[in-house]
Each structure stands twice: as C-alpha cells, then as structure tokens.
Length: 78
Image (tube, rainbow, N blue to C red; front, side):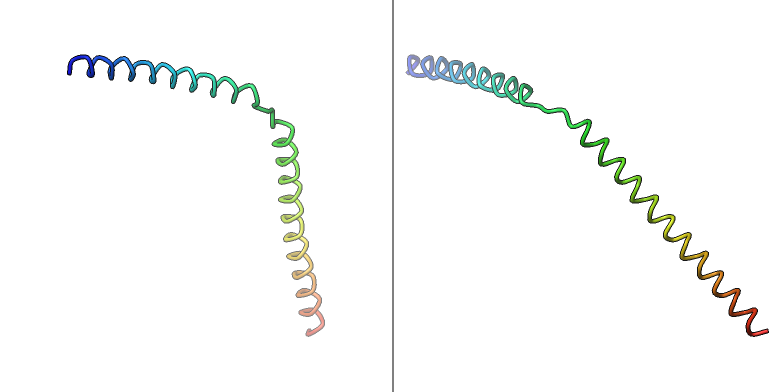
C-alpha cells in the first residue's frame, strides 16, 4: 500500500514537471509569433478621425443650408 502511494506521488511529480515545461514552451513560442500591429492601429485611428470629421462637416452643412432656406422663405413671405 505504501509503495502504491509513493509511486503515485512520484508519478504526480513527474507529470507536473512535464506540464510546467510544456506550459513554458507554449508561452515562449506564443511570444515569438507576436506581431506588431502599431501601423494598423495608426491607420485605423487616422481613418476614424477622417470619418468623424466628414460627419461633423456634413451636419454643419445641413444646418447651414436649412437655416439659409428658412431665411429665404421667411423673407419671401414678407
């Protein structure tokens, strides 16, 4: 009985060491394949800023046109 418990403890220690080595190897290989996405993020930020600017300018243009048309109509009524 004691031999079985000792064998199980040794087996558990062996398996845990192998798992630790596999985990370390996995983390090392994952960091080796990491890529730099800085350029992609910068491009996306630039495009997002351009889109936001276009939307704001479009809204301001619509407001100006609406005000102008309303002013012309009110002057024509008088």
